[in-house]
Image 1: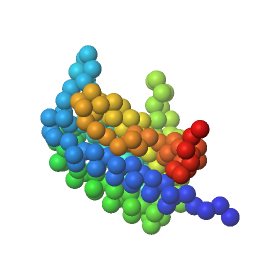
Image 2 (image 1 turned 60 degrees about the vertical axis):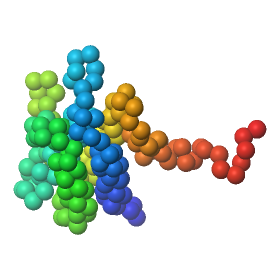
Image 3 (image 1 turned 30 degrees about the vertical axis):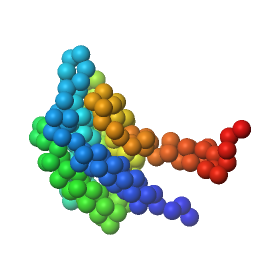
Length: 184
């Protein structure tokens, strides 16, 4: 019998958002909103908001009819989340609580419909809560890696594991020599 993945995927998503919470909690508003890039389009806050908006798009379907599609393209884009780290921290805590409760919902066993647009074509794709949580964790880690680069340009220290995918962390654990061995 295959063990359900949902609890592990929820834990992974919550762990990722917890890392982001710790990071944002150590930033000043100036660091959070500092502009980067030649076109001044990038800020740490914009990348954090983008991550949160994707999780919120998935969670917006909670309690709706099973046919309501998840739509990442038409998600909320709350500018307060990219400008105010204190508001963002509240959102992060709330998202982690909601994610933690997902495992007990009946929606965990039902297919999810995903609204997707490619060029001029729109489609409804069949997905699952598990698949969407896996996507959201990978998506968040990708943006956290960009955030790490932006933080580095400001001289902000970040943990070595920030913005590193769980699969890479597992690879590092498997391939790193034990601490008691001295390389020759």
